[in-house]
Length: 369
Ligand code: 13P
Ligand code: SF4
Image 1: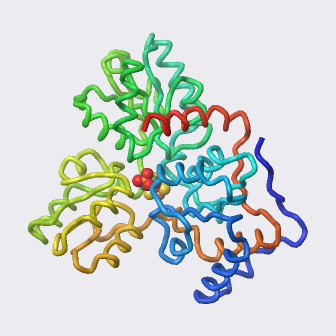
Image 2: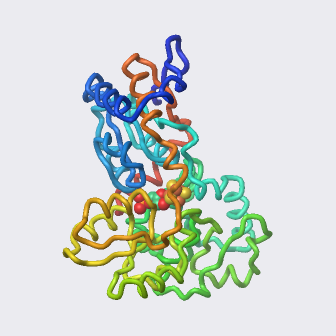
């Protein structure tokens, strides 16, 4: 059983007073609050966080690395998660019973994760079994709610991230004939293609329609059933963006996140998770040219860090992930100063039953990967 935060105790600082502070004061007070909390606090930062937040993170990573870190730092009583809700939930599930996870703004969700609700997944699962499709294994992308991860834990399934989808699909195909992948249609399709699965053997399940909008034959023929979900940021990259960047900068390499649509990934030179994108750019020679199809904050940071390389966003008019952006220095300072006062605000707490089964699916991922 996890310890519960103090909740709204007397003396809790209000967020309003922080909204008036200037950049320098915010930064200095964050540094001071961290100093006072010492090793009792660990700040984790996802690569899509803005610069004025990520500069305060003790550890940064993609969603897989952050999950690993949350499971390996028992010394921190508080994990302040600068990322989105599903990441904080996973950190809560994987961290020790004495650790409390804090999300500095509770509105930092993920629109893709919201596209698969447990009732919908359970209905789909029943419909598949009614058709006699029994040799099927559920895999959920990390970008999903804890109860979806728990569903996978209950049904011999697993969680994957964009950095380990291939080894996990490999493992899954050794267990069952078919995979049911949610919520990202595109990561599922891009990974299926790596296994040589033809596009017409990947069915798409639209949760608003009976049998997901498929005939029984289509579902029987499918090797992978892909949930109809997508990332509102990565889903906007188009094939024409690849053509435009190549025309503008001959010799440019196109590097995209596998949440991009299949046609875009197929046209690119390379694809990988955020951690993988960073590694590729770090190792690229001076003078090389890159158009990157991922979140704006990360691309801008890479461009600033590597002035000797040409680095540009794949689609010049795309914006950042709005929910990642909700974690601002104001919220971070507010949560840290409350911790200094002994008040835990915005704790993310997954109920014990859900956490138990979600942990089975997450632990499986950590073991197999
Ligand atoms: P990574 O697993 O690459 O960090 O991606 C997380 C995410 O939300 C991408 O949109
Ligand atoms: Fe979710 Fe897309 Fe934002 Fe990632 S970039 S957190 S998948 S909305």
